[in-house]
Image (cartoon, rainbow, N blue to C red; front, side, top):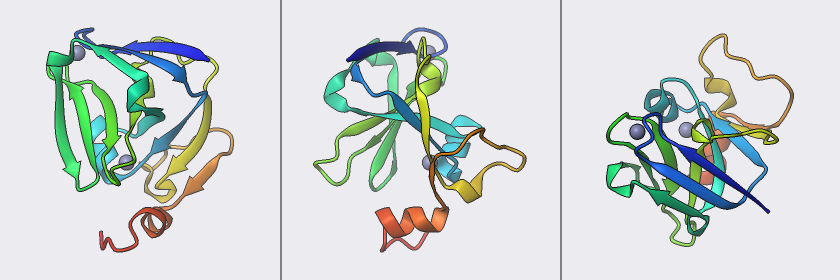
Length: 144
Ligand SMILES: [Zn+2]
Ligand SMILES: [Zn+2]
């Protein structure tokens, strides 16, 4: 079981992940694109496995009916996406770019494969879902 650490750009917020997973994914959806300025690389970690320091500097926004996003108030760095629905689902997508060391992690999945910024390609192969496939799987009633 590995432990990994990370921080925002300015260092006001730091975090430690215990039992850290060994893989991560990318999301190219419009919200992640606007939030990060590019695409969001995230790793799924149960909330109980993450501890923060500098928590007073964490700002959150309920960005949809099912999730909130968090960033550093001081420097603006994206920290995590937090799915809050259904209630049993209590996991962060921790920003992989905030890790001190991402060595050894496997790039394993991609969401919104058809929404990449033009010209952006990812090396290798991984499990992927298009926008329509994501909505069919996770939000069949959503019209967006
Ligand atoms: Zn910061
Ligand atoms: Zn997204």
